[in-house]
Image (cartoon, rainbow, N blue to C red; front, side, top):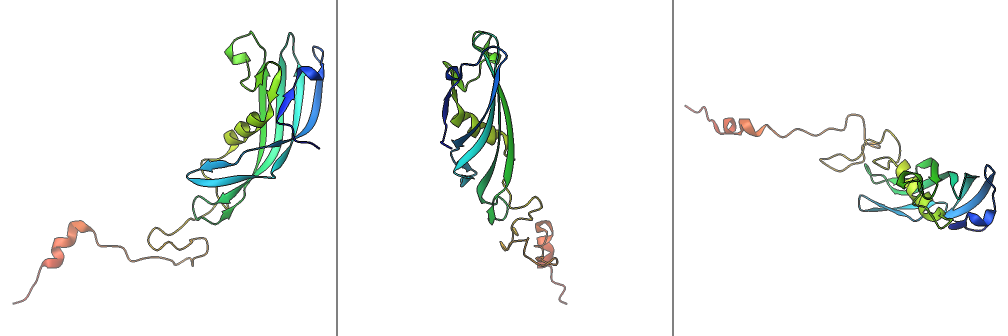
Length: 172
C-alpha cells in the first residue's frame, strides 16, 4: 500500500450522502517534547479514513489509527514507547463559516499528513512515560527509583532555621 499524504476528495466522485472507507498509509513527523526527540512508529502509519459527502461541496471525515511514540521517559530517562489510539473527526463545508471549514481541506484536497500529526499530538499526555507508575529519578543522588530498593532514602539536611543552635557551647 502506498503512502498518501494528500488526498483529492473531489477525485473520489462521491454523490451527496455517499460514503467511502479507505485504508491508507501516512507518514507522521517526529515530535520535540521537553527538549527531547520522539519518533513515531511505524515510520509509515496505517490509517482508516471514512469519508461522507455532504450537501454542496462538503465532507464529513473520520480518521482512526494507532501509533507508538518512541523516546526517553520524562521521569527516569529510560526508553519509553507508549502506544496511542487516535480517533479524529473533521467537517468541511465551505462557505458555512469558520467552524464548518476544516483547516486540513483546501480546494477539495485533504492534507492527511498534517491532520494525522495534529490528531496524534492532541492525544498525547502531558508526560511521555516508560510506564504509568514510573517513580522517576532520586532528586538527591539520581538513582532510578524504579530499580532502587524500597528503603532507598537519604539523611535530610538540618532545618536552616535551627543552624544557630549548633554554634552553642555549654563548656564551663
